[in-house]
Structure formats: C-alpha cells, structure tokens
Length: 253
Image (cartoon, rainbow, N blue to C red; front, side, top):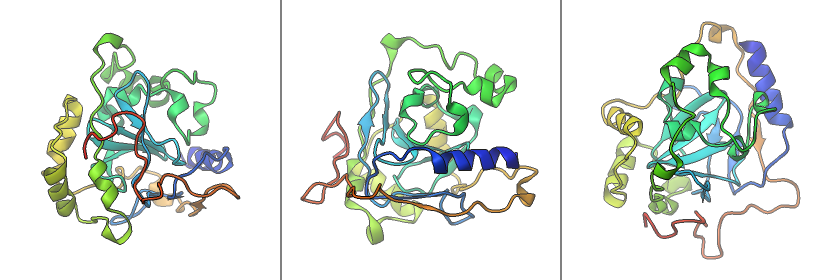
C-alpha cells in the first residue's frame, strides 16, 4: 500500500500542469478538522461534460466535479463529497459513489493517478479492475446505461460565489442554513439522496477509515500548486464575479 501511495504521489507531482484558477491545491490528506488536501480559494468555474449530468472544473489541478447538487472530489485514490466548493468533505466508500460520477470519462480527470494511463480517454476509468471483483459484483451494471434516459443537469449553487476567504462559512450548520435559503434543489439520484439524509444526521468525516498500514505510513509532503510561470490566475471577471459555467448560466442564482 505504501509503495502504491508513493507512486501515485510522484505521478501527481510530475504530471503536466493544467491551467489553474485562483486557487491553491495542496498535496496531502488532512487530519480531523483539516482539509483533505484541496483548498479552493474561490468559487470555481464549472463546465458541463457533454452527454453527462456532471460538471467538472477544467482550471483546477484536481479531480473536481459537481453532480446532483453536490461537489465530488477524487483525491489520493478516495472519493469525497461536500455541499460547498471548499468542504468540509465527507469520505464516500467505493461502493457508494453515484454511477454517473463513476461514468465520467478519463479525459475529464484533471489530475489523474498514474494507473489511469493506458485506459481509453473517452471512456470511464476501469473501476472494476482497480477495486476488484467484489466491488464489481456489488456495482454490477455501473458501466451500462441508456443514453436516452440521462437525467438533466442540476442547477449550480451560484450563490456560493458570494462567499470566499474570511466570508466562507466553515460551520456545517451555517452552510446548511445558506443552502436551505438559496438553493432549494432536491437530489434525484437515490444514492445522492441517501448521502443527503446521512449528512443531516451525523457530523462530517474528513478521512476514510484507517487502513492497517496507515499507522506506519509517514505523512506525505505538503506542496502548494500554483499557476505556471507567466500565467495569471483565471476564473474571475473584472467585476469580481466567478465565470462559473458554460451551460445553464443563471440557474441556481
């Protein structure tokens, strides 16, 4: 496990840099009351993936998505979800990740792990090969669907662009209040609805369950990701408003 984590970390540090928004993305899994290693300083620009009910963030150096009213991040071989663009994040087990998140093509992972190499860029990651037969048995049919019955895109929570830096709500209760006030969307996906109900009943978990070798694993080095030299941060217009999406502008305002 330690060897695989080292390979993943080296691959992430050596992979080509993607254009970045005005955000900092740090490598490393956080401790309780800390981040999972991703800090998004401002509401990100989100773009709809053609043919999927999912948005992605093309200017973040992170695997960052928005689906059915929630943000989803694939970081350090684990999935996390949140109502707000900068967390707090909940760990989501592989058997509980919504199918349309699993189906996102490889090309939309802006910071793919090394084992994605060799997989078709226009197809989803080979999760069955990666997570094993037991996962594939429990999630049978995840990679087969009717393209004519794809659900519509959820409206983006554009009200969150008003909150960044010191004004960003850190408390889950405050986030819930603002969401109920400005974003009345109800999830359609039954898996997302289950996550939604659990979050109203329990505090967030910022880390996956500890693996047996975690106690022996040294903490990964922290490294702040910045835009390439000579490139100014992008993602904000002259009036300070985030350019948040290329489809569905105005929904969720």
